Amino acid sequence: VREETSTVRGSQMQTPPDQAQLIQMLVELTGARRAIEVGVYTGYSAVAIAQALPEDGVLVACERDAAVLEVARGYLQEAGVHHKVDFRPGPGSDTLDSLIAEEGSGKYDFVYIDADKRGYLAYFEQSLQLVRKGGLIALDNVLWYGKVADEQVQDKQTLAIRELNRTLAEDPRITFTIVAIGDGVALCRKR
Image (tube, rainbow, N blue to C red):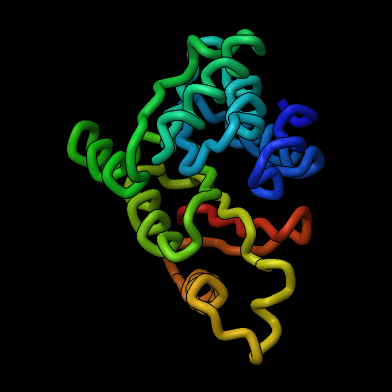
C-alpha cells in the first residue's frame, strides 16, 4: 500500500510507517475491539488498525471519496482484513452522526482522525460521544508542518488546527498529549 500510494497525487496524505506502527500499538494497548477511522485515503492506516484488532473486531472506515475508498478496499482485502471493515462512503461528520443515532454513546474503543482539518473539532466532539470511558481518540497532523507555531501563518486550515490544539489542551473531559511523530499526533483519552 505504502509504496504504491507514494506514486499517486496526494501521497503526502499517507500516514508514515512509524506512525502506523504507533497507531497499531495504541489499538492493541487499549484492547480495542471497535474502532473508527475518519479519512481512510488509500487504506494504509486502515490496514494497520484492522491488523491490530482482534479477529472479531470492527473498523468503521469513513471516507468521503468513494473512488479512494474502493482503492482502500482492495488493499484491505489483499491484507486479509477486509472482513473486519465496515466501509462508509460519504462525509465523515454524516457517518459519525449516523453511528451516534444508530448505536448511542460509548460503543467504540478507538478513533483515528486524518481528514479535512477544518472539520477536526466537530469530528472530535462526535468521536468523544462514540468512545467509551478510557477510549482513545488520535488526531493526525496537529503540528501541521510547523505552521501552528508560526503566528505569521493565518490560512484557514492552520487556524483550525491551532484552535483544535488549544481546545484539546483545556478540555477537562480528556487526558491530552501530542506525540511528535510524523506531522504530530494528538492523543486524547476519554476520562
